[in-house]
Length: 248
Image 1 (cartoon, rainbow, N blue to C red):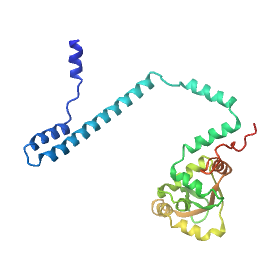
Image 2 (image 1 turned 60 degrees about the vertical axis):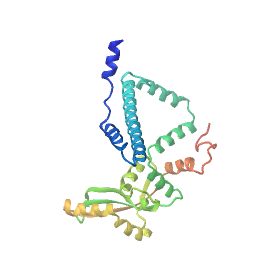
Image 3 (image 1 turned 120 degrees about the vertical axis):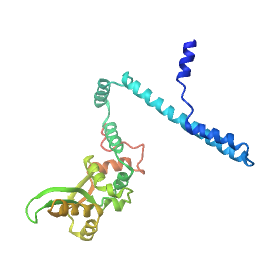
Image 4 (image 1 turned 135 degrees about the horizontal axis):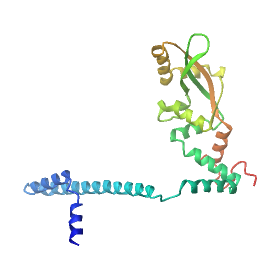
């Protein structure tokens, strides 16, 4: 018992310097004419400091518990997860499979990407370009910027400088598809050419690669999969309706 007491004492954390400083200030303030209000403020500060320390220690404890659980194999093992997936593949309906697919894709989208998805929901297409590097004639040497588009501006996204990356991710998920250049969008392409990402890429080609920048013009809109996902999941969709394509 004595050994346990001594061990528990040795495990006690020392009082943080900030808390000791606050307590010393309270003792000194007690002799001041306005000590009452000052002491109360300092007591509040001490309470906050101790609460913050407890919160951080609790967080460390939770992290340690999670790490210990993983090391001890608590939770589904890889073989169990694969068996569950194979079971679901044999037993879920077409509607359930589609819903699972939609949920998986939506979980990978950011709020800005959701806004871009919504901006194309009416079937419109918007300008998109790649910036290539090469000689004035002949094949390109490389593409230095993919998927620059006015879609981010049209949708009012927050991270405008990340639009090419976000559009690339949405294309990889199968939500967006490219189409040919639209001659009727001449003004829109000119606006796109003034985009910061496009200008920076052109400057890189000229000054860094010592080549000629060339713009490859396209349009971008929702793919068939993107339209199906929007119809099934948009805020006005009826939640009690079967997912499109369920024939069972």
